[in-house]
Image (cartoon, rainbow, N blue to C red; front, side):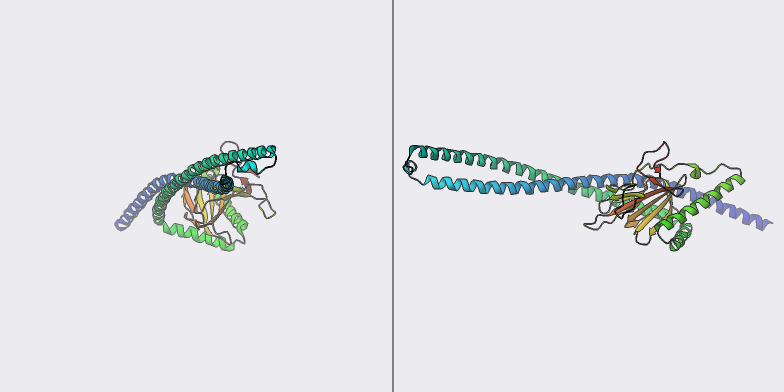
Length: 365
């Protein structure tokens, strides 16, 4: 009996230590998550600012090129007028008048000469103005280049901070490696069984529904309230997962002759992708020809599918909050990466951008 009591006490002590460790991990993860979401938001703002500066710089460069071409054209015309006047200047005084038989022709020649002089003078003044304007535009371009380089440096620094924070988050996740590996193995098995992306999402939805029903049955048997995660609503607090130009909206032609069930966004290379809403990672990694994809489960029976990333940094089973970084786009030079974002509820497609009643973001279709 004494031995059993000792073992029970030791077991209770281990359980208490594990509970304390788990609570500490959750607290640490919460602190990391706040830093992650704040830094990710700063990175996305920096990406938008840098894209705007790059566009303005390109516009100024085009303006400099056009103004230079116009200036060269005007210089050539001015040179022709000047050369003609130089040739006229070589005629002896009174020689121009004797070159005509009638005085009226001489008068006309004088008028034409005066017109040429006026045109030359105006062309010279216009060329001076164009040179001054070109210098001003060139100075603006140089200033914009310096500002762009500065913002690029700021963005690079923030991206480094974000990478460091993601690394720390991963270190916390590693403490629950066994559970995470089990979740990933389950997700891998689903992916192997799925025929295509639609099938994969359908399988995860079926699993989500089965788990929700089981949780409701347990709550009923134990006479406890149904978990909030099953009754809550999806709220896209962070908007679209990435900054960029919307190429295809929900309900539009997807370019392949079918209707798009999501939103396609053209992003800048290496853009940061964040969670559109709080949820649980149900699938993470490459799938068929869709590169890296992520499937998030949200309260109220919602699922988010995010595809097209070059790297995903959110593990299966992980809890993420709205705005938390979950991946990055292709960062190769000259790349024009596209992200596809799809939202579902109980198997129905939902427009992530549509207005909806309070508490629910997206219009079911």
